[in-house]
Length: 220
Length: 189
Length: 181
Image (cartoon, rainbow over all chains, first blue to last red; front, side, top):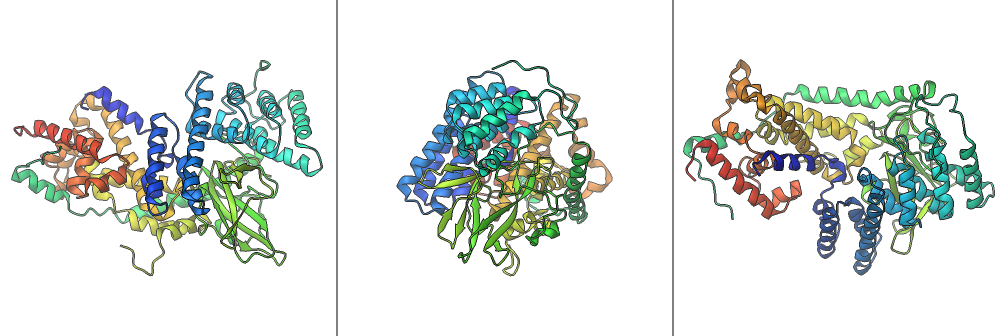
């Protein structure tokens, strides 16, 4: 442990946000029966070893206990979260480039839970760019799917919005816009289709648009 | 596996000395609170800059999705307590969080609480207050930027998703609501 | 530690999060000295500890909404301070090639007036030569006098790994202090 290289590895391992490194044991202690706490800690160790975020597992366990769910149904739910995170991480790593952030993996897990496929995640990740990070795109996609927008249209709409070159706030407002259209009577698919057409037609930067203009993006 | 370290007396004395309590300067509190107050005030200025010359920061922004779920900014912390206030500008608790108001219409409820991933699903952490006679309950909490799941707890027992927010399976046979929160410069619904 | 009539940490955190910013002073007062000894042994001087604690308290305010268990503000704040202490050591390590005289933290600077009461002894100097993890386990065990279980809970590492670190710390200290193995 005295070699500089090993020390640097340790130092870098301490880099990630502490807020995300919730101490599993401390969070579960006193709130969750010991047997469940032990099982969740084991799952958390497994998640950590695979480079997956741990907090969603603890969240799910706490949620189950608070909701009065029997113990034998809490662990399967936690395992499902772990599987979703794993699948999301695999899908996102498969696109190459920088490894996905914890936020991106969590958002990917959420998107899978909302009904998207690993392939959808990969497609969205590949459309992401510096102004439209993967985590944000996946959060929006998950929210759209959760509202009822069909898979393929969810992906199409998110991609069209990113490629239209507008500010990330436009991407972020999509679920709200779909809900607003639904409130006026449009089915989610039609609402999404309308927004995708609008995004695809968007050419010039907004009057108050940011200086960073985007080049003409390639078609997916 | 560890065998104790036998320190010679001089070094043992040093360990004893090291155990003495350390008190930091009393001015530290003033310096910290000055910085805290600056942070509480400055997002207001950032929000003004956003309205007048909107160049968005490079890091992630994500606005709240639901229509009845207003992710907006309150002018001063003191205004949070009165649900009727809907000032269009805001303070965030820090640069990475924003106040979000949650609303549930539940005329027959005796109590309503908000529980979610942002407060460890603690049903006591964020009770809602009745805002009017029509049974509107509200609470405003500071949420970190990002995505969170939540639900309302009615009368301490009934878990009710937010009717106006996207819903996902909670894995236990119910639904959770989802809120995605933007930074102070995010879109205001 | 808390008088019964005082609000709990969770109560104060929630008050701050619903807009009562001034309440944060309660937490500052409660915790500014709590880990000051740990920080000063990790960094080698009270001055450095003061900077670290100040930074950590401000950072904790910035990240307060991400404190998922407000009743455990103490543990969460400790991790923020810990990260700050480790970060400082990383910064210092990069300048290590310029020799100890360049050390930002205590040793050479301490012969200056103000710190007379706080001579940096040879043990502290030796501790500063350890890796942060090794130094930390030594400080938490011998200065803070925590059990391995308590240390494990605070820093999120297993007891076996901690004992291994301590073993290495001891070996290194023996080398540095010229003790026979």
